[in-house]
Length: 281
Image (cartoon, rainbow, N blue to C red; front, side, top):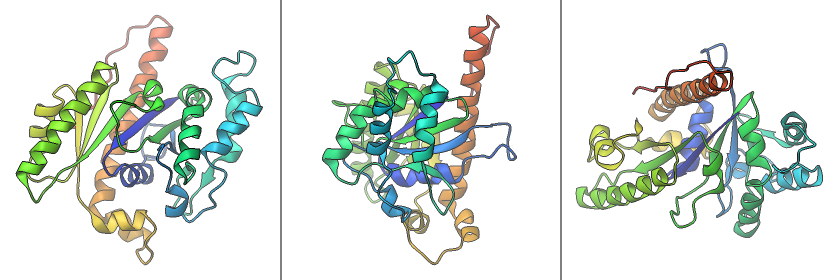
């Protein structure tokens, strides 16, 4: 039903934290299950982070869709039928999130991401029971991710250079360029700012993307290490760490955003007036 594309800095850490904090139907009015999709053309790391087999991977999924006739141009198969091809290939980590890892090698990963634009991403955009959190890796404005075309929102992650205001200012200037490129292409952009120094979230949003929603995520090396596979930290302790608490708040806002957009589209298709979706933070 919805795709949230995440790009920029610290993307895999951020997106795994979002998936871990995604609200369940019993916790909120949102009824969409999160599905992690790793679509970084440089190669994937989720299978290593979650200590799971490298396959099924994104390559496996797009190959299965191709063999089943699962392209966006196939008028003979419904979205539900195409989802039935995908669902058995989705992995589940011991920590809980369901995910599709990218191949670890860049050549295979790049091919799989390209093929996903014609097969997997259209299905994810139509599926009405899940939201895909798509890790697109670092942003290359000259070659934007294919996932952006299907995304309800593109979350642009930016980590500040706390040790140097001058270096941080230079990187924020590049953030302006990135945000401008995305909005000029018609994408809805939100900013996830990692670190609260040297500039405050309000300052960064006002300068880089004044029309965008923004969130602050803390720099949390311990949580980042645990998400990447470090042992010895209990689930209860992990949930109390600053990054996980912050990511849960962001996940709740994103769930509300995509739910409101779904409601707006449904009301528009039936001719009913609908208010603009709003997320405040």
